[in-house]
Length: 487
Ligand SMILES: [Zn+2]
Image (tube, rainbow, N blue to C red; front, side, top):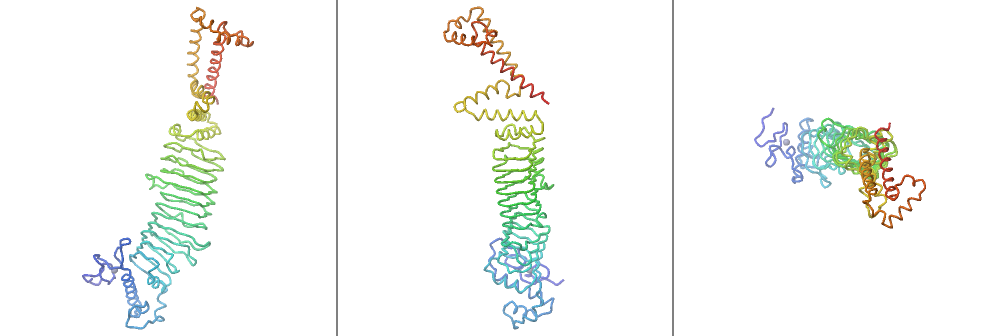
């Protein structure tokens, strides 16, 4: 190994001087995002680096190569001699500064080569749109800032073991080549306007993935903590799989204006936030999933099956704008939170689901919850009749849930009736006989033939009122008992 000069770049094989305060040269040193301004110097060094590399390996005078790139040289540009060498070029450990469309010189360099291979390189805000159409191969590269890529008419770029901070792929024309990813990592990735099945997406691991205006024909696995699907069509299943290393983290899912012809599978997840709006799906599976916040559901249609078995809704569920046309399952769902924080429509859907599953006890529980919710929503001023009926139902048997309540009321009312009857017999309630309105009501009640034999003389009206109360309470007892014992 050759001895390094004092001011020489520490990267092995690099003969360039160190760059301002770094121990590496301008090519190899880390560049802070957007603060690097010496692009001209960088590209000049890059050319010299290439020239040195080829003059060493191919025994061509470096001046010949500099002339090839149009840099000052002692020799004439001898393109023919060296052209065949540049079918392919490799770049190692180079940290590229942010490159935009003004950096023509860099694109001119790239244009001299065929396949361009980057190993262990770093890029900032790389916008492929400006790059000449070539075949690019990236190996163990790091992409910082935003990376924007569009569909490629020749052959898609290849990425192996690369990491991306914020990657966006935008398909401009149909049937072009999307990039190929092998074991890459994404902090955030967006796929826009994709109209072909994306063959390699199931390999992705990602912090955030956004898919907008795209069409997928194959099953899609989305390994991401944050998932946003908008205005897209999925002809097969969309599966957000449970990942072991994600068990302590929760997922955020937003799906808007999306058709899923297969299954939307969000089973076994912990979901921090779930928004489903203008979504049409064939089947939805949320088996054993925990929802930390209340899902936001509006215009959500499921044509076949909804499976919430074993799900936990920590702060309730609101299905007012969900339309489930097939079977819905809530078996083994954690019901404690649902019992407090749902809308009446939600209770009705859950009740129907238990009815269909022949789980009468739970169905009745949710029927009572629905009635109670309705009772709280109605006002005495606006719907007095409905409110009164629900009130009677609530007080007498808690909507058929408590058979002891009507028995208790029967005891209270029969005691009261007994007291009034004996007081009347003993002449304590002489007012009942002298009140002319009551006398009229008694006379009116007395002429209802089928009732006359049951009514106490002089107390016909009060007897009738108590008779009605007892009938209601006995009926409530039977209903409540039947609900608890029905098979
Ligand atoms: Zn260097």
